[in-house]
Image (cartoon, rainbow over all chains, first blue to last red):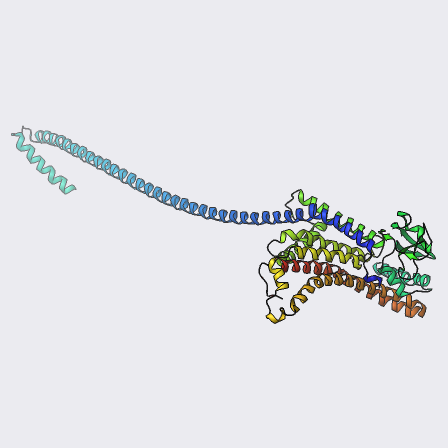
Length: 166
Length: 350
């Protein structure tokens, strides 16, 4: 049963080679690898954590930006509304001012027209009265007495005439 | 076109199956073939080409009584030749071993540390192991934080799996002290097993199927377990928590526990040795079926050949699994034994 009896020579070589392999691997092999793998695992873990945090931060920043944007939008809206109101007010004011101005001018014009018309009527009346008196003098061939009385009569007649003409 | 290729391949395969059979079928002793493969020898037999054996001579290192240390190639001792009063015994107690003819004419066994086939394979496998692990370590030392790819990835996967699942969980707290040893044992056994599955020169030797190899591995575990044993571990052995009559007049349980120290490691040794030996023997036996059936006619031979090739493929795949499994089990049990020896207070998980 030589299979079950360990051979001295092989035993020697096994101890020798396994010893060397063991020494080399324990010194330069496995600890290096396991340490590196561990380090890498830690690195991956910390990176994942950092990425997670970054994502959270980004989300926070995004919501913040959203809020700011919203605020800005509402502010813009209010500003726009205000401007609109101011514009409308200004327009209205201007319109009102223009209207009053125009009305004032028109009124003044009316007054002036009335005045000049009155003046014209008065002067025409004077003229007409004069002419009428002259005509009447010529017709009557004499000087009419009491100018004042005559004039009042003519004026009355003229008024009647004008009224009936009107 | 494709189908034509396949038919060609199949025909070639069949020819390959039949042709060598008629060359080698003369007289085949299965037992001899299997034993020759699994036992150690002073040369590395590669194949037999016609009548000629192709074998690699290996260095013989012997300290003979008469001439002192001798180093020469084993080709001097071929076919029972005698060289410097040394020869390979053909029968008797030392059959297959180098013996020295003493003055009285009887054979004595000199101190023999020849690099035999298993020793040479062992050294090659050790080199392979170093060539696998050291470049990987150097790659890691360069501090690349990228994950390992390809072959490195495979090795890293095995390594981290053993480290995390076996060593960390079985040894316990100070696993880092023991992980280099356990990883070395794991990869040592794995590389030796896998190399043993390669059917031609650098592989093919049943290194882990040799009891000297498994003995050294088991002894290493034995020493590490018992040197790192805590007080609780030794108390559990010599004064276990059992009814007092089991240990006082006759130290029955302490004796059993004490024997247990040795049987644990002994079982480690035998398990690894027997599994690999048996695996190789079965594969060889199945392959020999081809040659045995050669004398039974072509039809039987082709049938048997196909069958045995299928069986051998299956067995080789199984051996691949076992190559990993045995390395895993040896490491796992070593880790468990260390973990038990490191237990701070007795665990009831027996």
